[in-house]
Amino acid sequence: MHPSQIGLWFVCALGSTSFAATVRPTWRRAALCAAAYIAAAGWGSDIQLDSSATVGIAAAAGAAHQLVYKPSPLIAAMLAGLLAGTGQALLMGEGAHAALGVLLFAAPPVIASWLATGKPGFAPARLRDEALFLTCIGSLAAATAPGVIDGWRAAVSLSAQGGQMPAAAVPVWALMLPLAAVAGGALVTLWSRR
Image (cartoon, rainbow, N blue to C red; front, side):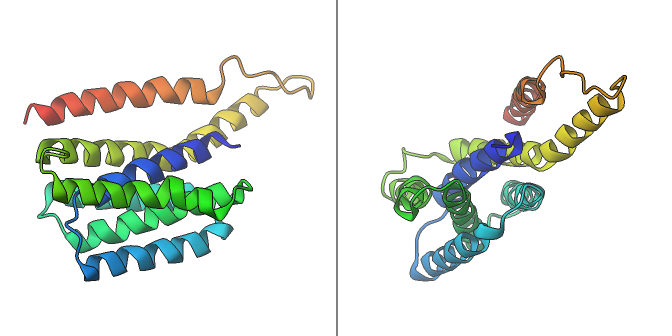
């Protein structure tokens, strides 16, 4: 399993639930979400590691749009379905059964939307904004991770002497995780002071 795939799973799980919690369900929004889910789950069988950049940038752009401009329930519903379907496709690509993908990636957004609508205290506006903000940051990290990892590996292979591949002193994921956590924490702090 490639480290950027773990980041993409994180984006799909957090993003689909975050977007769904901002949407008051209607038939039109539910149909759009379901169509995006089905399309992404079908398209997802062809997901390559370079697709994490595309999915990450789309999720980050959608989250930023929801935060900066007037929130669009249609965009949120579409992105919730897209991310849930992509997560299911990734899971099925690992050999899991489709029912497990539905349980892990389709059920949480549905439950989040239902609870956010039925119980206002479940997801207050500030919590939804923070979840979208973390989705934006995590999506950007997932989008850039494959390039950083490839660059790190290229640097290690270029520094090889005598045709032998040196062992990397520190795994790339061990560097990316604290860096993403520190950057995300700093941005959340700045965001919460506005």
